[in-house]
Amino acid sequence: MEEISLTELLAVRRRKLDALCEAGVNPFGARFDTDGTVDAVREKFADGVPLRVAGRITAHRDMGKSHFLDVSDVTGRIQIYVHVKEIGEAAAHIFHQLDL
Image (tube, rainbow, N blue to C red):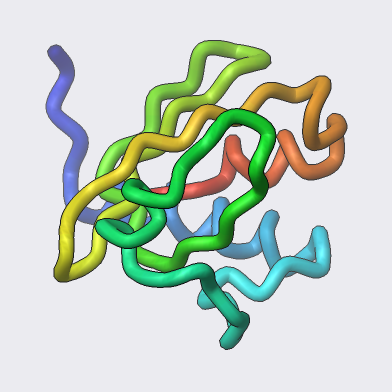
């Protein structure tokens, strides 16, 4: 595996930050209402029931049109599955710009 220097890593992250800003996305988020902590949302989960959770992305696996994200807070971790057909191409482009 090729090692990337800190300078190169910072340059990549700045390009991603610029791309998010150009797309009109606040890369640092904003306050919004949730359905509880990660642990509470995990307990409430049911197929077809939309829930909102906030936390830090601690893992991101990009499978092309599918994305798997781990979102964590002080209560635990939850995996989120996102597919392009559900969110649209514009929102999917944003997922390509996310960093941990």
